[in-house]
Amino acid sequence: MKDFLELVMARQSDRAYDNTREVESEKLERILEAARLAPSACNAQPWKFVVITDRELSVKIGKATAGLGMNKFAKDAPVHILMVEESTNITSLLGSKVKNKHFPLIDLGIAAAHISLAAESEGLGSCILGWFDEKEIKRLTDIPSSKRLLLDITIGYPAKEKRKKIRKPKEKVISYNKYGSSGKLQK
Image (cartoon, rainbow, N blue to C red; front, side):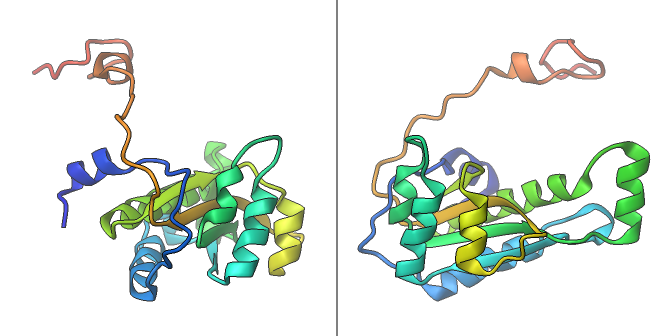
């Protein structure tokens, strides 16, 4: 098992999958457990994970995820985890109104991070996608039209080698004690 920082450094958005290899059910179950255990505002857990493992349906979901030249690789992903926003509890709902922050979006983002990191820890690749034909995927999966389908996370064995991670330097994204200060820890 990788330590956490190694896991974060290794995780990437994989856009090519070995479609000859199926994802083992025990690996998928551990990934889903990591998602289920993700923290959420006021423990609302405002999510439903619709897991697509049927090969024929997975290809259809992948085609509905591809559009305008985007996400063509999705049809080769053996697994799609569709993240649906569910009702929140009253405490989270009130907090969202008072603070003008839609906590369920934050919560689902945290759960998506858990999924992608758990996939990496299982030796699998993932890609978090927000560009897709929501109506078509809802039709294919019987997700009620009143629900919001926020993300499609593809999961599978990567078909390409890891890439060098390109990120902004620390000094551009981290400050201590006030906005715009140096990116160095000051005591």
